Amino acid sequence: MQSVSETIFLNGSVITVDPNDRECEAVAVCGNKISFVGTTEEARRRIGPEDSVIDLAGRSLLPGFNEAHCHFGYAGTAKLQAYVGYPEVQSIDDIKKVVAQWAAKTPKGQWIVGRGWDETKYPDRRRPTRWDLDEAAPDHPVFLTRTCGHMSVVNSRLLAEEGIDRNTPDPHGGMIERDSNGELTGLLLEHAHIPLRVRTAPSVDLLDKGMNAINQEFMKYGITSATDMSGRNINEIRLFQKKLARGEIQFRMYYVVRNSGPVTLGSDYLKTGLITGYGDQWMRLGCFKAQMDGSGSGGSGAMWTPYPGGGNYTGILHMTQEELDALVFLGHEAGYQVCVHAVGTRAVEMTLNSFERALSKIPRDDHRFRIEHCTFCDDSLADRIRDLGVIPVIGPAFLYWIGDGYIQKYHPEWLDWAVAARRLLDRGIKVAFHSDLPVVPCNPLPAIYNAVTRKTESGQDIGTAQKVTLQEAIRAYTLAGAYASFEEDIKGSIEVGKLADLVVLSGDILRVNAEEIKNLSADMTMVDGNIRYREEFS
Image (cartoon, rainbow, N blue to C red; front, side, top):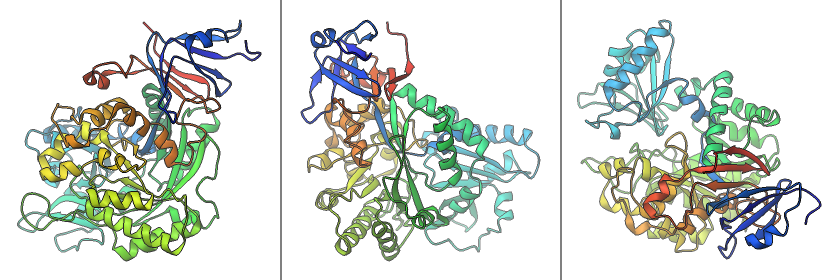
């Protein structure tokens, strides 16, 4: 019997994610730490008069999920603006209706800003154009970003106000789309739309409301830690810190700072002398981030060979090899963990080149350089990732929610390269999973389902050679995420002395049929020893 009160979980399937992948029955929590892991019989002997006892009744108890790559602030504000995401919006006509509704309540001349369109979900699979938006809102500049965040469609009024016409050259690292007659379609890709995204960054008021919504969503899904990858809006970082101090945020944050085109927050942080790891168990400074290419679902990732459909289009690179080399070395020399957004095979290869060159100049044993997404990866790239000790942070959530679009767009060979978890794990590489919220929903269970079955939301097979085991998928969504932020000693597994960040599922994930994994939910979320979300147990 303990002298200090505990919360004791009994009669469960406790998935520890410890070095031996032990499955236990019971866990005790004292304060904000795990104080016991073992059998129900042993746990019963600990129960004192002040203890709280929770009967898991066969449910699974896991370490809290770690969302290793998301855009927390932007996710929260998406539905507070002109939201054009699926399933609410399922066609170009639906987009027009949303824009027209916003035009009706927005003073003429003011911008209409929104996000979420995805042409792969539409019957005609057509991207919206400026002419579509002109029809819905001729008197307002309209700026709608695709779900991937890497391209936007704008209307004719906005193009005119920005001085963009058919003679405007493509910016370095970007593209202004033109049709076969040379007319602007209204689609701006990568560095052609990033300056406008920076200018339309959400207000502090919108961020405040949005953060509340996403915090609740994280608790509902059992997400107790996250890495925020936006790294561009100082207001997000300040506001998160304030809300954390006020008790309005219940999860732990590892936040990056980035350099990307007009975004120079990373360089600004270098001037402070702060480096990766500064902070505490709730909010910690993370990576120095660079962005090398575009989107997997949007078709702007930089590949070795042309995309299907004819022509020589191979995607969009944001930088030259020399520019990336300089940026990676800048962060590495200052002492940061460095991460690079690289989706396509060419971008991944160039990122590995830069990592190798930086480490040859200043060796560091435990650098934990990260490739964000690493969406397309063949054997040769996987070998280099292993040899350099790089962490791929990959998204089976993509393949579940928008994998049908990958099947529509890509060569069969590319589908075997996509989110190549099996290829990477077989080489002993530590792999972390993410959703990239708001690109796709952040619920980890459909993503774990996809990692195990390689089935999309509609049930199509995609790259089945890359299936992983259930234990491997759970580890990638828990302990591997902690490792990717240098925090594996304090969280990510259920072991005595670690932080009591836990999630109770609605069933026994190790014993349900694989098809049922995606239908499980979180019945309880505990963060720092406190229950932050709870469904009534049946």
